[in-house]
Image 1 (cartoon, helix red, strand yellow):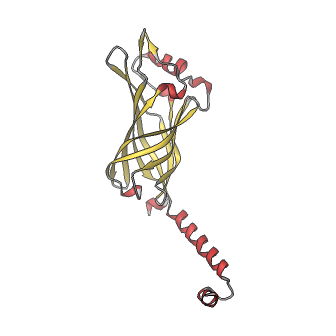
Image 2 (image 1 turned 120 degrees about the horizontal axis):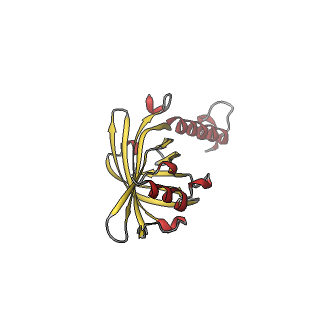
Image 3 (image 1 turned 120 degrees about the vertical axis):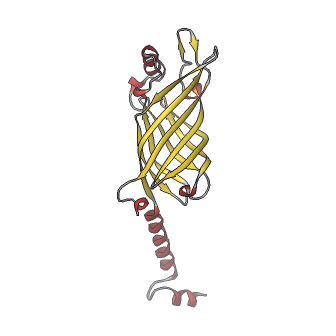
Length: 208
């Protein structure tokens, strides 16, 4: 067996060295296959059910980020973030209460933005996902990180992808005081929907 290993490898290279070389080549190819995508347009909508019935919606359009597609791991690296200072409920006073009292955006890093990372989409190569798929991720809000899970709808538009993902969020799990406005409260669980278009970054493997 030792003799065969020596003949199979490059001249002068021992079996362990040949194995190391193969692993290095495999790693470099896997890295080259990663594709970088940038968010070109996006919107976040938060549906807030009220304790007395009915609901209101808060929207934010200041969302962006760059993600890296690693097909073998079904993981998007990088991050998507939304500026919580742009969150709009349609009523000025309610906006002020939401941003300053409950989300505490003035506290800065960890509070002024909501950030989604470690995104896993569907099974197998995410570029092959069409229609509905389950997704998971890690969500940073109000200085607290929690795992989240929900459903996504994926459509290809030319070289870009349009994604709409929704997931439930329990307010108290992120250390946020239960929101109230004019004596009317928001229920414990709200629904978050992220709609975005992602296009290949210039020079990435996705553009080739």
